[in-house]
Image (cartoon, rainbow, N blue to C red; front, top):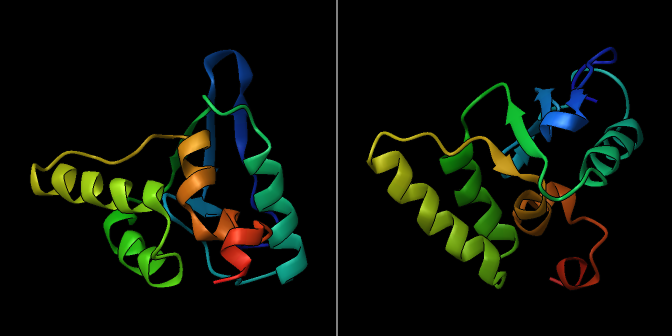
Length: 121
């Protein structure tokens, strides 16, 4: 958890989740409170949401996070395509969020920590 009492607001009928600073597009918040185990538990709960759930993080760090994600998951074709799309959106002054949870789960290294192909890298 980014901070011990951070919360996410999930609106199932609207297919949306507002995650504050716990999860960012292609990243996650720093641990200012709580433990790594608590953060991982929070990230797994978010990752378990339906794939079409739109994720609304508190900040737009996607472009910088994409650069980092490519250093730890360079062979991920979904991530490569997403990083290219993110760059084009930002160059056009467009936002990269919200993002669908299924895309985030395939491309965010902090949601892929337990994926065997990612762990092997």
